[in-house]
Length: 183
Image (cartoon, rainbow, N blue to C red; front, side, top):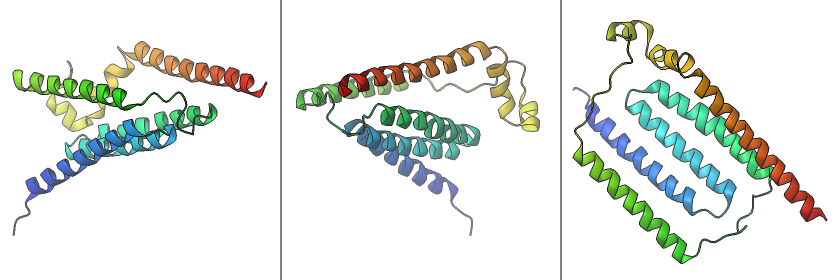
């Protein structure tokens, strides 16, 4: 008997999609920043599983390593360093804010659906200089890594410096805030 792979992929696509949506919803509704960050990690893992189902294993692994790993460690470090672990700091999440946020979210979702219906599906193409034969021989990482570390290296490094500056700024602001509360 022949295995029925499309049903397997369809089931898991919807399963991980629903998990990602539920985790994202839990992420934006948590009062505790630490709990919200952990729900975001769960969302990242679900998105990684979706990438693997779409035969983009490299992107799936990078999703886990970079976002669920490194970025979330930095987020949790800053949250704990600034002592934001308890909910209710400047909490303005009344019913009006929730309704406004829901309306904006529905508007964005409607726009995404309208844009996807209006446009014909595009075919992904390889960057210039890479043929399908080269990708089959060398793998899919070279077409991604070559432009990243050649043409876009400066932008890549500037982005990392901006993230570092944001973390340092958060530490400085947290330190000043802690000194004010100590007085």
